[in-house]
Length: 131
Image 1 (cartoon, one colour):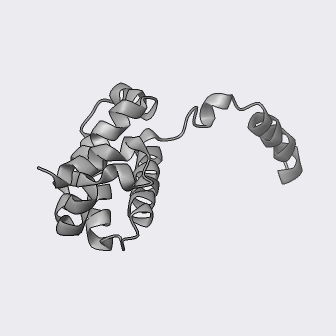
Image 2: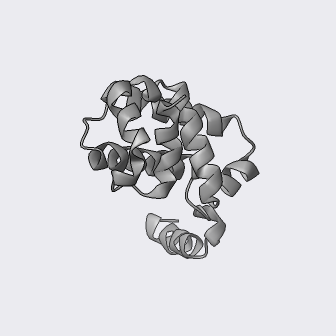
């Protein structure tokens, strides 16, 4: 046998691979991490504040720990449920200490939230500055 005899068989097997070899859905942890990071960028940019970068990274790590502690089915449910996502985001926000950064400024903004151009779903993060 030479290499050319094997090659067509390999091509055939590679082409006949079932779609199950490809991930059916994106990794929910990765997806939620990216979503959380995007929301934090929006939160600080809208409020015209520099994000506390180290604490943002800590928030991402806390979110990862929260999600990895859950069963796969629960992670997927959260990835498909915006309310559940914001619950996790808020928990990671507090656990990382992000609610302690810019606290005076953000507490004042939180008290006057109606003057902010911040979408309502971000209010759960603002509320952490009032407690």
